[in-house]
Image 1: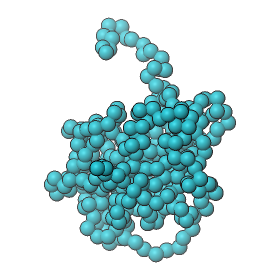
Image 2: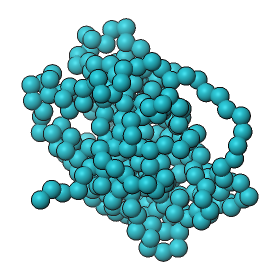
Image 3: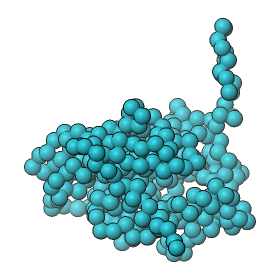
Image 4: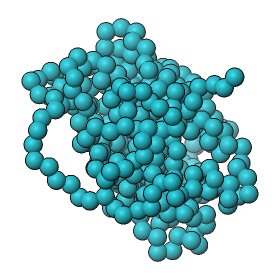
Length: 306
């Protein structure tokens, strides 16, 4: 007997429990991660906001900050403030709390659909996703087999990822590489027909690879990490309706990295070439603990234990 598909597990993850008026609880899977995946928290927070919007108004933007790392396996409570219900726009503010501490906050705006003029920059000319290898297959090809952590990740991964450029595995391959990355994605299985679920699923996916563009000039995307990375903030603008269980192209680039922070921006296109979402994110990049210089000990300071 087979278990739920990756897409079904994602839908379940986004299906929050309403425990009081404007208060929701989301589950956080037990995983071998140091912290809860940021895209999960952003997606669940957006679900909480959307559940309090009575009128049929799709979300058009969100702005969020990651304040503390979430603890895997511990439920997260989402408290929604109904900031404004206007004639055309609805605004919600969400605070994510875990063990009494705020770990994340989000402001989302919902817009009653209107008509107006249109323009967009064209979608880049890239190979079709069917012509590109799956991420797990590309890793297997390079390593000969899929290491157990990657195997576990591949079994639970809710999205099929296919990088347009072949992965680089050593710093020697990074010479002259620009801070850009392109990847096709789609949920593995049907997400149903609720537009809010598709929006929140894509919000989840938007945090998976965006900071790749920042890292590309300095370290391979897969393999040993030279830097510890964490998302600091995240902003998205939703332009058109879409389905997250159909192929979308995530174009990513980093215009700037300095002061241990890197800025990344993304453009997401559907298969027909329509620009459906724009994304911005800043990430923290610190040398991995094993590569950091020892901290100077102050006089009379007790050395840290452990």
